[in-house]
Length: 348
Ligand code: NDP
Image (tube, rainbow, N blue to C red; front, side):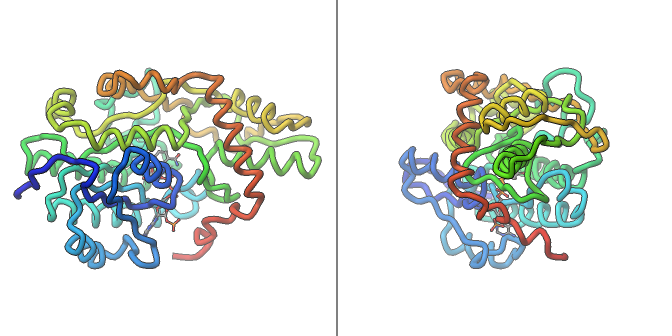
């Protein structure tokens, strides 16, 4: 396989899949801000990523230099429980189609997105990249996690087989995300969006209490999608040999967390304050807690980008400000976006 010679530059052709989603839209903004001139995106009705043939046609036609996969079947605990088949089939198909087309077309850099749920359920200390095993996954989203691990391994296998382990195709693993394009659907939103929705609705309907699922004790690491979008755009520009100096050819994935987590109780109190909800918070332990902790060890990230601390990713005050901004955006768009992913209600 012959690789295109030029390095990624502002005139490189970049395929960004999933540009309408939470992270995809933030990556798009970050690439544009950095001055990338040729960011190619496709609407789902034009290019359904389950369609391998159409993907191959798109690659042949535009011959991209780099590819970012932010398209996936994504959802919260309920959606994962209700549609386990869709979560494994669609994610495997989307990533398989795109990674293989990228390999066949010798793209210079591919970025795939993993998820912190690929690490084992048992948490002792922040997960480092080498903690990845194929056992001990949390049952609530196992099909989704298995698909993500397959994508990560496929990227690594490509580097092993065709590039002597140089990490050309990489997987980035963010923690829980929130941001302007989050999904507030009642049935498949993630924890922070679900809480913002709950507190908002309780406030405007003058409810006396908000009920949070589970004990409130588990901890989660959160990042704003725009911060993650910037990090992903920056990764495009890291020379292969720099990445290789960290991976030593043993893996091709990197954690991209903020290295701080909050209990669900702490988060609920922050959101109560931001939404000015005056009622009580109750915890319903009849609902499962999920894993107790998923904090990532992202020290490799700070080694690759020594300036990253400047973004103050782990600063609590800034975290609260970002939630506040997201809440404002949510209330501005009112309830109309809540049903964004109504297609989840369709049968397979
Ligand atoms: P979103 O659901 O917000 O966006 C996913 C995008 O993929 C949507 O724009 C969706 O389009 C598109 N898509 C899905 N299926 C298809 C298809 N068959 N053809 C074309 N487009 C399709 O997800 P996120 O931005 O939250 O997640 C992006 C990536 O980041 C995923 O890989 C996810 O696993 C990972 N990630 C997300 C986290 C989070 O907290 N959200 C945390 C860690 C990792 P449409 O809306 O039209 O269906």
